Image (cartoon, rainbow, N blue to C red; front, side, top):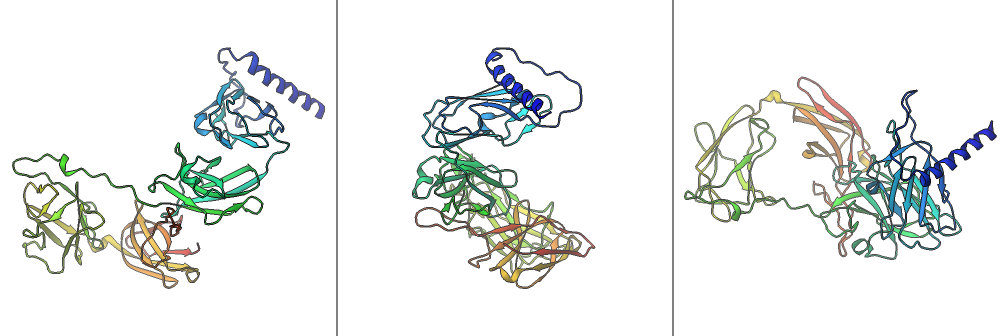
Length: 470
């Protein structure tokens, strides 16, 4: 029985290779239907040169599979390590793939061709995941491996669109100037793996999967390891935290593009009410299309329903976002307010003003729109300046420094919150990004994302238990 299986495999291998040569010009053949559903992906049965061959410098590689295949976005999925100057020509037909290499290959080098998830069978679309073909121009295959994981530093979540890059340890400026010889993609869990690496020491980085694969813009997401890694000693526990050294600027409409009319009235704004009500725990924000400034001769006033100005209100322009006005006040439940905005109270750089005086009438939320929460935490003593963050729509809504194993929050708006743990190294109460330009090489502060959300419901004892660790 064993001899028959080996003979059958040999026949299939010969058939696979001959189909590449003899049927290359034929029309597509549709496999017969019927029979049990195929749930298995295709698999390699033959290759020329054979998979893992040594002492070869192929200009053409043929690989044959056990069934008819099709490919999806093969150029986008393909990764060749070390990288080639020119992308190989790929031709998929019937049950085979032909790879034509136009570059001159390096001597004594192991090459791997990763197809990602580009290959699947014709009939059922079963994907051959992470198929890799390997060969060496030298006498042996390199066996170095590096494994790890990448998360977004600010949120603790995964973005699988990044690539992980290796540069030689002795090339400090390579990440700014050179395309990498070795890079790999992340899987859906943010994990990465390098295989068939030559011995040596490397710097490891993370970047978006763009054409340059260089750190040429501080607004790009980026990550780096503080120390070089050696293939001989590296384990599979490398952790990298991606950050933006600088946020991409928000594109606001220029004042010069706004149409001025005889009344000079062009300014418009939006307000951030939760539905039609003001949250008592946050300021009111008014956001304009362009940066604005106040005209002190016509001040904005927060008033009661009798238009009586309220003491204790603070109305200012956000220094970080000069297009936004912040109205702060110790709001009370179920209370009506009026914000009176004189026509000439706000101007932009061209002295454009509002169409008319606005009176913004609103009411604060009822007490029933809030409830308390109890959060029990274990392990906070081992962390430096831990802060628990509550977020909605990827925006941090509330932050609470953790100083004991029990946190009681008296008022939270009803709804579901994502929980994250910030390790606030400089103890300034907020997340700080990293840096890698010039002499600045600073890791971002770390954030851990908890998979279990905090759900605040009315008339309910809202409790949750958390285990805190980095």
